[in-house]
Image (cartoon, rainbow, N blue to C red; front, side, top):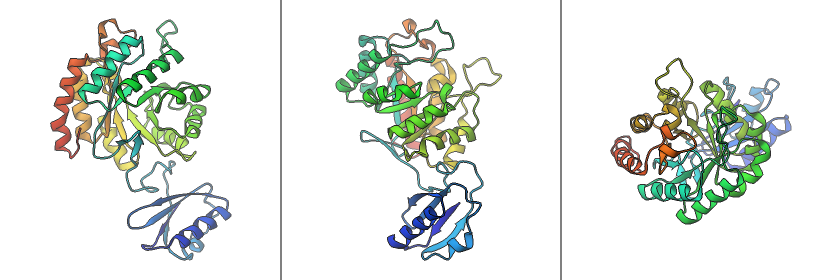
Length: 337
């Protein structure tokens, strides 16, 4: 349920409404817009008397919310959330590009990639120190050494770092080095991890699970927001379908649907979404045209020798060409790059 305050409601009236809701055993989430404020009620609202709440001073009306996700809903917060990462605004008019290798392999590899994506116009450096792999015999990442290399690349390039965290006990370690905590597709419903990254109060990049519905993605985000951490970025990275030509099927329509349902920013990962480097550029353009707030692109200085996902990684020159091709698309939909 939400309580819509009257236009011009005073701070005292809003505070009294929030206090009354808390007295009734529920939590509140206050969203202050330009014209009016909305008090979101979190908890078991079945025993609440809507008529009684509507008699409180400054209240215009109460509105029940039928969707299972609350804090992520536009009903709770009509205005778009803009997530700030070291001064970079995700969800504003600028299209934000996160780029780098799928996996951190060496100091030379990472620094070459970081310098290349920085010079081409990327805003955030991506790179995996911990890698969840289908096979236990595949490269699993460098662990803490990979985190140290990411921090070194950040010092040199001044690019914020996004990297994956795979377990709740890793959160304190990864937050020591990273600016954004990535929850991967395989961990989207790792609820203990979602609680942990929510408590960390760091920006979170939440990837859609390979077989997850849009509602399940929003419910996963709800776990993070329930800890008061509103700095969540949703990522469409392709879902598993019957199609075998691509690694996954990028759900471009999910971008438009999410922008209707939630105030959280939405980015697209066309690298994992397609699994083929030659498809990354056209799907990136489609994502921007559909309203995505950013992109997550894999770039490797030598994809043919990559230890992880070389087939979907762009070479630096190709990434530079892609960035140039994105600018007119971004401009056409009122974004900048």
